[in-house]
Image (cartoon, rainbow, N blue to C red):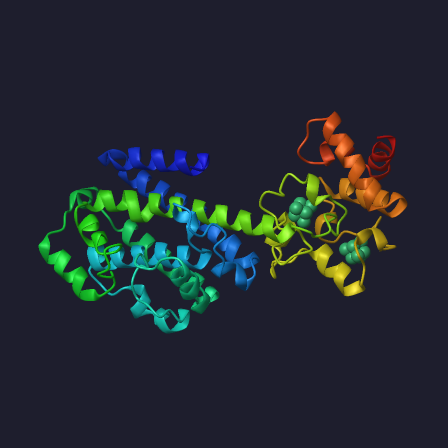
Length: 351
Ligand code: SF4
Ligand code: SF4
């Protein structure tokens, strides 16, 4: 489990279990959920449409065998059902806010009954942007419910009437892979529900989403020019495990993820000008776009690399990188090339 999420989860559980620290526990829970949700946001904002119905681990045993879209649907359908039918006793967000039509889902269930190709087919039908808005709405609504809880609510349990109520909603399939969910939820008190659907369940599925996205990125990068538009080498980049390169639709480099359209400004500018990379541009030395923004500590190292490519070509550049990585132990290129363009260029040329 992600170390940060795991630590936050443990701390939150400990705080929640004591009356004196309960309010702090709820705050920690909300912070954890916000943190994990940011990963979903990043994926939805930067990944292409087709990424959401791919199953790069189809047939594997584990949550990563699903799709990105299925994972989002599943996490938030479960939360919506549990938060509203069981804890708040009001209407689910899916129906109250008209998301069923907006998301274009053919099912109202949690999706546990789907298998193999059915998952991919289901995912293909969903409107991912609306699915994301649904997830956001469920999270916000659950957060409100959690903030309204009192320490004494934690021990609240659910009886046979709740089992019957949940069965009647039709939100859990009668398929053997799904129907156990109702008894599972009703076997827990509110504290147990906080432990699973509202925190741990998120972490487990979002970690699986990370695996899926990383795999999609590595598939996307196969056979693609490994030189990034800004002058970095994707083959030697410390982010290459999760970035699919700025030359593919799976561009998740730092500047792409913070751009409003999810595209790296250097890539967009080069494409608009018909350049293979910034190394073909006369404005390279003075440019402050995207990765070259002066506040970025890697800006001048990127420029030094682009200048090297301009002078010596990509093939030589990749060889220099191989040698630098054999010689030194580093993650970011600026750790070796420093902050000065000409000095950085000299280091590249001397190696
Ligand atoms: S962050 Fe940049 S250099 Fe690294 S893999 Fe992505 S596009 Fe390539
Ligand atoms: S203006 Fe800047 S971002 Fe655009 S191609 Fe030139 S160096 Fe690259």
